[in-house]
View (cartoon, rainbow, N blue to C red):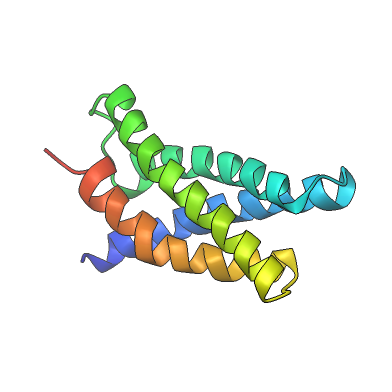
Length: 127
């Protein structure tokens, strides 16, 4: 694992996460949406930001076909979305945590244990 790339990936992930949380909290607190809908919409916004940053800043593979990367990213993102939504639901409902705390814990687990490695070895793999 190359440390600079890992750190860049974490910075890109943090930027996507900030956007994700912002959208989630605005949806829930301002628009009074269900926390799970806010989680999904936030995840969409964060995922789009993270794809762009991964393609151009972290893995630096803009020469690869964006459509192919996008399809691979979508598959990983969909898995991430499902893991995040299920995790937030379980932590909020079963452990009675506030949805924001649930989202923090689940986001960290999914980000380190799922997203980074699949982006490195599947989405943005160098030819």
